[in-house]
Length: 316
Image 1 (cartoon, rainbow, N blue to C red):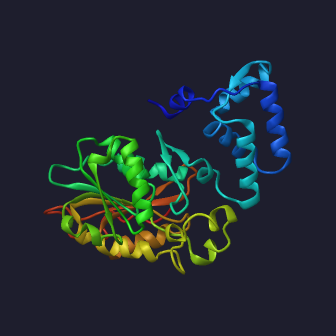
Image 2 (cartoon, rainbow, N blue to C red):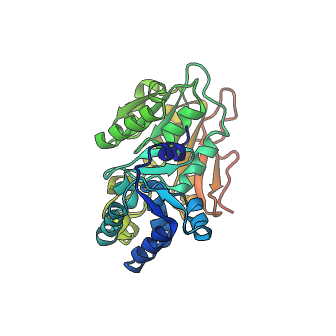
Image 3 (tube, rainbow, N blue to C red):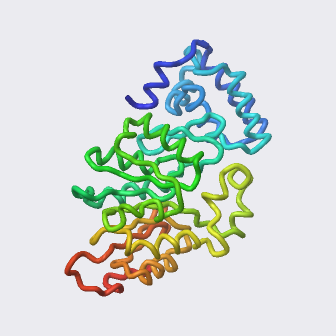
């Protein structure tokens, strides 16, 4: 069942007219904030989709019921304005791809651009029998949930250093019916996967990659509330990416693929790290805005030419 449909079936009876809701919306925006964020709050916490909101402009006398009273929605909105707390944390949910995920402080809020990482992963064949896919730094479990749903016949592994993140990932896997397909492991990058080294057909990672100086200048809604562990990638932003690239040739199965998300200006450096690690066909991939935000590479397949530079694709 779609999340939006679930919300409709669990609406709390609080009938109001469209004109009342639209007037309330204008009042809230006079206090500050962005219209798109308030509309997101109305959707996720109030049960009023953007499409419904637009229809009310044409039918202001139409009645509707909200999932929460306007007073509660206003309290969430003003708390967001006063403290810069992300609305996703205040609501406790975040839509992502075809999922509605639980999120909480201590876990990175899934970003829209990371959805492309799943699209790139699903261009790869599902892991064959005896091999697994893995998600390094799973956080909320968004990547693990998406892969487990797409490949129900394949076993996966999800790693995170944070026990808080692993607990939330477990809850999201349970909610999406995928808990029996993914094993959660605590630790740093490749180390918890040691028993499966050489049998990982696909490994996906969205590690911390923001340079420390850039992280320190981020908007308070991100810097003061989302975990630095999931964002701060060290002085040059490449600390975690170096570790992941360095271990890939040993951990991947022969012919296995590594997919990485990185900062929008790190493409050349990340491709260089993959090449130095002995991986084949380092390739840059754009996000939906054309930024070179992703990279892929492969461990040499059996009997393939052992030329790490083969297929090297620098940033155009």
